[in-house]
Length: 67
Image (cartoon, rainbow, N blue to C red; front, side):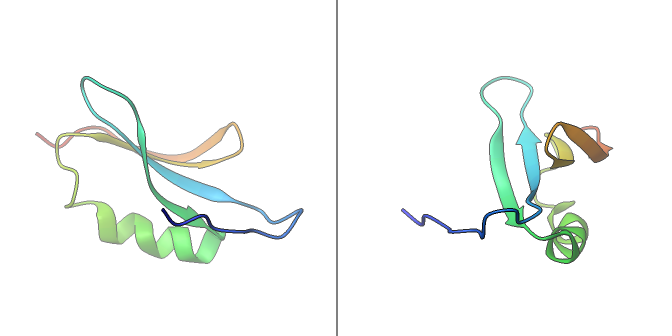
């Protein structure tokens, strides 16, 4: 299993996928620029799941399920 290491104080952004049933899963994590690009890339990968881009407790973007 990959165990990424981030510098202390690093602003970590996470893209979550939430299915209609079951647990949320992390699609990507990293800095803002990388997650802004990843946000566009993952839109078609999870059509039945709600997607959120989050920094700490703040949700920056969300998208409801497409199907």
